[in-house]
Amino acid sequence: MYICLNDKIFRLLSEVVTTENVRAYVIGGWVRDCLLKREHNDKDIDIVVVGSGMEIARKAAKKIDPRIKVTIYRNFGTAMFRYGEYDLEFVGARKESYDRGSRKPVVENGTLRDDQERRDFTINTMAISINEDTFGEFLDPFDGLSDLKNKIIRTPLDPDRTFSDDPLRMMRAIRFASQLGFKIEEKTFSSIAANAGRIRIVSGERIITELNKIMMCNHPSTGFMMLERTGLLRIIFPELDNLKGVEKKEGKAHKDNFHHSIKVLDNIAKHSDNLWLRWAALLHDIAKPATKKFTAETGWSFHGHEFLGSKMIPGIFRRLKLPLNDRMKYVQKLVDLHLRPIVLSQEEVTDSAVRRLLFEAGDDIDDLMALCEADITSKNEEKKTRHLENFRYVRKKLKEIEEKDAIRNFQPPVDGTEIIETFGIKPGREVGIIKNTIREAILDGIIPNEHEAARRLMLDKGKELGLKPVKKLPSDKH
Ligand code: CTP
Image 1: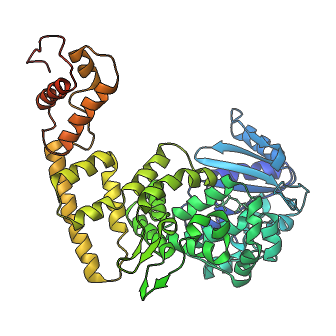
Image 2: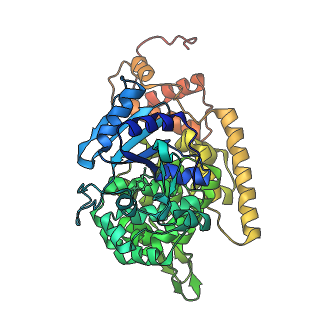
């Protein structure tokens, strides 16, 4: 079978490898996605050379444009360069590639077949020749094409061997299965379950890259179910694994918070591609096990789980090698606030409660509302409709109050400098007290969010604190 390689780049490479008299093939993700007619996200092209990948990379770059910079990864025996929108990676065909106990590759030259069999999955072993005499020839010794058609993830060798070569592949199997909607073949799946503990030798950075790819799938819950069933979840993310299970006391049961959390994640995934909003959805109930209580009168409660959950996030982010910056703070904020719109919708919606929510959520209010709607996973249609209606009402109130009071990006109408200058005081406790009084009065609706009213309150509060204005007050200031 021959496959049409249309891109100009393959013709250019073909000339180089033919002149150099080495065999070379396109292999891996590019071939897989080309056969799947799937847009390859990052335009990576992997070329395997029976010979030195580094040398061919240098020669190819020189022929295409001598100014191209080739990056060499000597440890891995690979070389790469960028050409237009493509990242081309060259590797020499290898035999055994990894040390047991680490994933440091031991490079030993091999044939194309050697190289194919040491790859992760049959669908990633398919190769296409780029030599002139066999240009486009399809080489598929492990019948990856059938697995592609039947939507199956399978290792080319005994899975124990493939996973022991690089245990990250266990995560990759699950990632590919959830990204492509494929099934992991039974033996491959059992081997992941048997070898799950080996994931411990893989770096956190590599694990989180795969986990984030699972997070970004259309139905991330499929991936998380597989992580759970293979035992990987318990090792890489015990806090999430702890959410599993239903307890029943005196005829009252609480829901399974693991299944609930991944359902909320699926719901938000339909609505948004924001990875961090997805993380907030996954983690919103993370502190439920730690706050779980049962009393005969009230049944199950998880009092304060939103607050404790937001406190658990830095620890989880640090361990998972997620960023400890404003993205983490965003997730913390959403977890902390995730019950507020629900509480609001259940009580009489007062303007002041809406103002406070707008003040705390700021620009993230829309994401928070989306998270709360995703949080409705009840199978009871009537209950679901009622919640959604309540949220519609909360949204309407949020809009009304925002239009009237502009609280979302609250800037105090009287700032610290004005307080300091008015009373001729140094920055200190009093400034804070006056600023707080003004903010609280605005949020409670006692004064409007306007300078004149805020200034009057500042003067009253100053007086109460024993402060006197130092200069005559120009009534037209501001
Ligand atoms: N590969 C492997 N084992 C790994 C990583 C990669 O065998 N742990 C092989 C596979 O043949 C894979 C190729 O190297 O197809 C390229 O790897 P990579 O770029 O990580 O993945 P892609 O298959 O290109 O898929 P994606 O871009 O979606 O990650």
